[in-house]
Image (cartoon, rainbow, N blue to C red; front, side, top):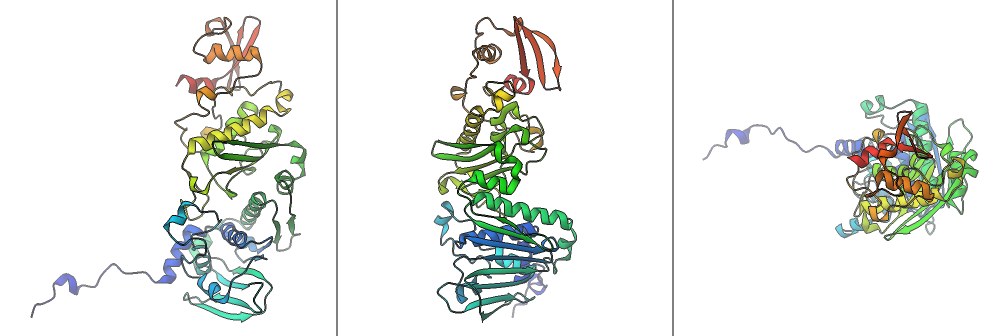
Length: 440
């Protein structure tokens, strides 16, 4: 008889990992912090049709997170299946990935959270007399039992990362974790103004976001009453893309972008190109290194946006990225031009609007967009005729009304940003960043 080859006799070095370890590895992509747990549970509650959601937490979310909703609940069978990886009610086949219109869809959140915590789910459908309690054991098994419960779903997550000490060790301070949870709930409140949301931190007075008919009423609830009288509405449609929301007075600008919220089909996203579009819409009204208060919602067909880019679903890709950025830029600029802020700043139109640029680009870590928007043929003209002549003289193909660069005398520089020049009976201010981009 043949002897087995030596390679076959040796023990294999490659092995299939156990399901518990697989879930803990997958949790590293979905469950980054307590705030990410809250985000995933909020998305499930929203998809369940909840009208009121309560978020409770203790110890910055590491000790306990509880999310209570009044949504449609689950049957006993569905509740048990919900703890299995890639089990979801949101999609059925590959074709559904092309038109996702729910907040969640991957079927990874609940099993990932359960694998790194002490997890309890209690749920009941309104038509059922008895609810279901589902728990997980340390070895990954799911236990289910009947229980008396109100309609809806309650998820309790205790001792987050208790079995992943390395992950827990690198969590930030309790105060920072609590701030992250508050920001996550606040963004959900902005995305769904009609939702009643309650945030209750242990030892603190609960914060209630009462249902609002308008986003303009919700923003002061989240960002504070000081912004209430300094918001301007935005609403515009272009190329099948609708942009709505509010932009804030430039005086509200701050050094971080936490109050610049971008929503794509109601999903909070982080997108450098969209952020640049907003900042460019403000032009020089918001100085370099500062960010305005703005909550802007971009609505487009689900088939035109891919949300299946990252497990945390905060990044998206667009089928028409240039058109989306142009629609957002145009909507913000039109809104800003119609506000009294320009008069307060002594301007009749934002300086530099004819040459879209991004004075904030250096800090966002993304490369400049190769295609500038809006297209040259659609570039807006400044309202002041004299400024328009200067614009044409500086950047146009032909000098207008005798205004030429050769006619200007350089006087000085302000803040290493603006060049001050003197012409015939004219003071000319040149944004050197915009001029530099134009030359390039």
